Length: 68
Image (cartoon, rainbow, N blue to C red):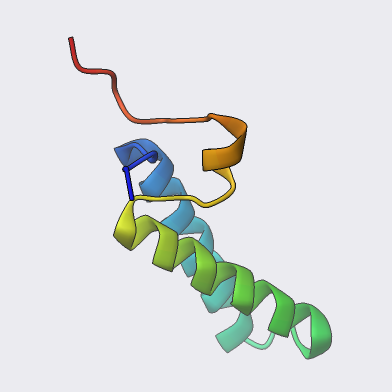
């Protein structure tokens, strides 16, 4: 798997996941919406850890800095 996520992209995804988790644990979101958002947050964290987004690959997107 070739990395296709840059540092900024990874940081934003982790922050979004943290906000979703905080909203869930503060009981601001609940029910089906909470479940869906928690799954999305988990995917964001997982893709940030491996620096690879499966949706970027077929679209040819890469947020990594290009090496010269």
